[in-house]
Image 1 (cartoon, rainbow, N blue to C red):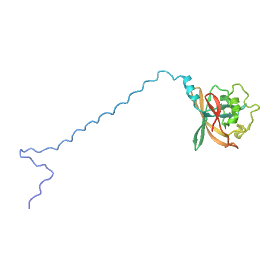
Image 2: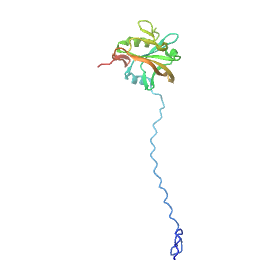
Image 3: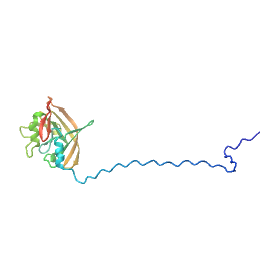
Image 4: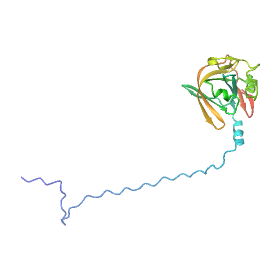
Amino acid sequence: MTASPDLGTPAATSSGVVPTSIPAPAPVPLPEPPVPPVPPAVTAPFDSTAFRAVFRRHAAGVAVITAAGARPAGFTATSLTSVSADPPLLSFGISSTGSAWRTIADAGHVGVHILGEHQEEVAATFARSGADRFAPPTAWGPGPYGVPLLEDVQAWLVARVLARIPAGDHRIVVAQAVAGAPGGEAARPLLYHHGRYNALRH
């Protein structure tokens, strides 16, 4: 019987040299991706006058924010924003030098009122420096958690304050709605655009 050849040993060539294994080819380096150009550094702050001029062209709804304190406080806001539906969160900005900030800084709850086009005078009263904003003819009464609520508004909310975030010369207040309702009769909203109050024209 003929013995099986040893398959594990490479056969010698005619020259008597046992061939070695062929080395794997060296990896080919991939080209580096192009580096995007670096934008020029901003060396000067954007002009605040131009910034205000841009936002004068942004039409915004008008709201009044109120809070209870030693005396009720409130101010007109065009920065009201719906942040989340679940949970129901909202936000608004308030000047940290405004008279209403001292009360809202300590308030656990705030009132949010959406104004209709017939309430331009209400908006003007709550924006006027030094005015007794809750004196007649302002119609209001205590609501949930003692928050002062205005009458005859488009819609209202009472919200629990969750955060007060510093932002330049303002504070961003984030709050969660705990009560509220639309007004009895839907009317066109009051808007603020180009430095004056307006209404929808359709």
